[in-house]
Image (cartoon, rainbow, N blue to C red):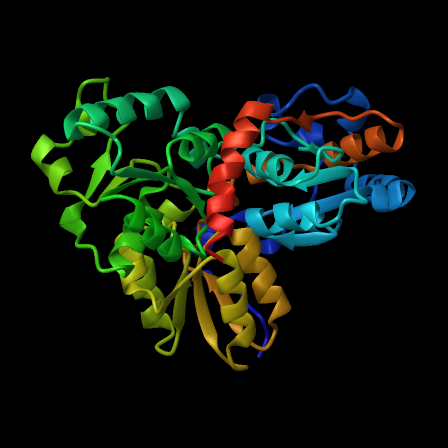
Length: 398
Ligand code: SF4
């Protein structure tokens, strides 16, 4: 069977379904809002020249540099990656390669921060485009988190029994907050185990920044939905995040109202349509999807889980996937004996991941080859120390 991307609404296809052709940076529609401090010499370079230049810089650096590519990066970046994976796996990989003094992280800002925290002091982490952030991570600003923490402490009489847990997809400052306040970090693969640990430490969990991962994990552990309360950080201070005091008192999990703009797009209608079109379809989705999507799916798991699920499915399987399109397209290509398609026919790439254009990679690699470090991500030592505590608590659970 030929690998295919199912496209039930052809007029609404996303260009990434067909593979994104590298345009010169100057022709990218969003270049105006990306990092502009890249020398003009890189603005007009076409795909072939960029490939040649990245390869040459890569070869001249040898083992001194490692290029990491997150699963959601586009193909024209992934082709250069020495390793690809999720954010935590990549940060660990870099830390296990002390011979690489430069870690070029093709992903988003919080991932490069995590790599800086977990890697050795002599390793320098570079993010090709400094504007590659994460909208979910940005939803949990330190000032809002501190306000919420104070209000909950006032309500409960203390925060002693409130354990902050943050998803890996968060800023280093939020990881540090968790480390400082008896909390921990989790990934989408170990969230149940981490929450079990958290409930051994206290009565309630304050889960950041992805409400969906928090809710889906709580539900998987048997916590009723009524005992999980959303905290709306957009409300002015003094509003208890929009929740009634008695509701918060009853809650076992308080969910920060953050979400991933990519995973929140999936709908149950898409799943119903996929089942109508392919009665034997298996639906696998990421836990950053909404609760109703997860309930309607056949399987749920991290990017690594999804990749394994597809790889291990028997030949001829039909699999509808609820995650970012670059990964789905790659899985379809790598599993030509199965039909693999994205549930959302109009889903586009994660727009911030997409900001890592090959011209930025060429610029940072050539700069490193010439002895200049550009776009280095440095997490302040005090933040690192506290964030490392939260990460180490998680690692001790594995
Ligand atoms: S896919 Fe979602 S969580 Fe991941 S970087 Fe993009 S916006 Fe952030």
